[in-house]
Image 1 (cartoon, rainbow, N blue to C red):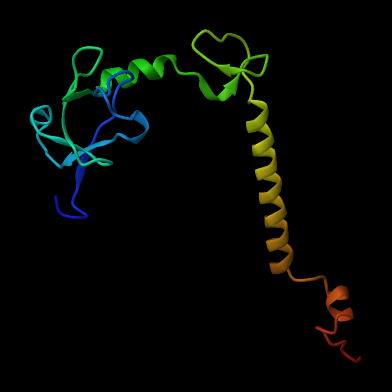
Image 2: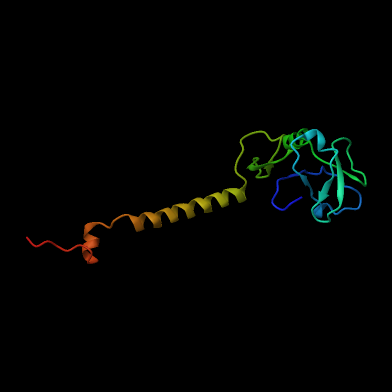
Length: 150
């Protein structure tokens, strides 16, 4: 594979890592292949060790030579049950599939949004005050406008 060419990557399912690898330092890549039917046959390279592996989309676990990777169906099933990161329940905990009632912003997100908004408004005010011309009285006092003699 030449540097800067396109490539494919995949995401390994939980418990889908080959035996003996460190899940935190394991990421498979392969040269770009337009035909998805060939992806299961081609060798995939671990970017950290350079070792080749095969991939599979069947079963729950991997084996020594193949990693069990996520399919689109796996990703959608995981998404269905993931907690909401932008909404909280009545007690301030992340919302999930079983959450009912009025949702609110999680406290830390609400604080971050308020801080961001106030920073934006403060920045806009600074910009506006620098661009907006001063009233004539202030400009005259600052010596920028000469008084006309009658």
